[in-house]
Image 1 (cartoon, helix red, strand yellow):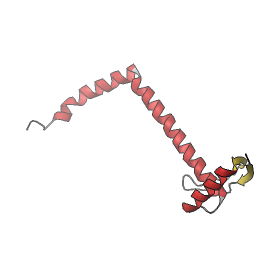
Image 2 (image 1 turned 45 degrees about the vertical axis):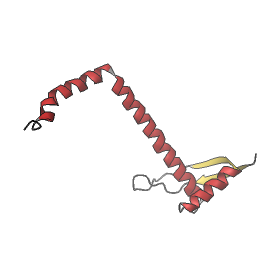
Image 3 (image 1 turned 180 degrees about the vertical axis):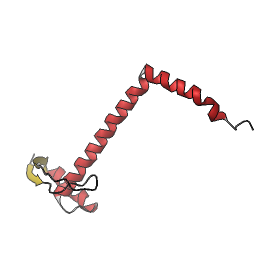
Image 4 (image 1 turned 90 degrees about the vertical axis):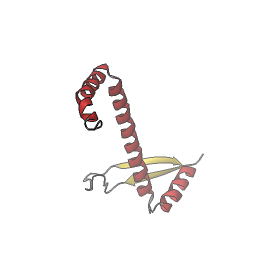
Length: 104
């Protein structure tokens, strides 16, 4: 298997609409087939450089990982007996408001 080595300097990262003042130099090792495929697909999506492709891929990975962690935390909260008791209490409080006007 052939590996390609690249050193990437990200000069500007925009996630919140403002450039980050600090950049990180990273060396990435990829199998040649993955590099070729990523560049081909990246160009179809309008990316001109390998850095742009890798930057977007890493942002997508981070977003997905954050979402998975959030979903897991929400699932854990939903199984918490004290949270379930609070939710049932809130449901009882608002039961009359939910059905208000339905019988008229």
